[in-house]
Structures are given as structure tokens and as C-alpha cells.
Image (cartoon, rainbow, N blue to C red; front, side, top):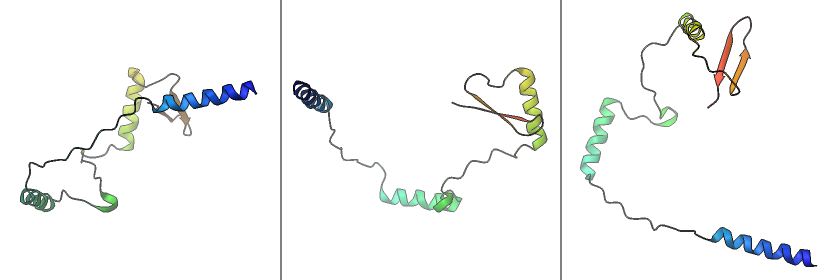
Length: 108
């Protein structure tokens, strides 16, 4: 019976400790510095430039030039190997991709 009483007392005090120090901030009203007409003008300008996208294509990655060819990627990998720039150690995953091709993916 004593064990049950002690367990109940510990449970009750642990819940009280969880509620200690809880603070809630009251949301403050936001005052805009831009008029409705200015927002509409900015929106029209962005639409004219083609900067507004919607739907599944809502994120458009910026253009960074042409993509590297497969040969260029392999050359860069070989150069990184020679320079000792590849990540290695406990956090490295090595997957054999047939033949001597190796893909290294370093975890964060």
C-alpha cells in the first residue's frame, strides 16, 4: 500500500512541475506601412514580369546555367578523389553502383 501511495504522490508532483513557468504572449496587432494600392501595383508588376507562380510549381529554382554532363561530373569526382576532398568516416554511406563507380553521400 505504501508503494502505491508513494507512486501516486510522485505522479501528482511531476504534473505540477510540467505546468511551472508556462508563459503566453498576447498577439500584437500588425500595422502595415504599405497601402493597398501599393500592394496591388507591386503584384501587377510581379505578374507582368512572370514572377508569380501558383499550384504545384510554386517553387521555381533559380537558373544556374547549364547542367554538367556525365563526363564532367565523373572528371570532377576523380579530381576530388585525387585532392582528398571526399568526406569519409563514420557518417559516410558508400554504395557500389556496378563496376568501380562509387557514390558517396555524407550525412549532415
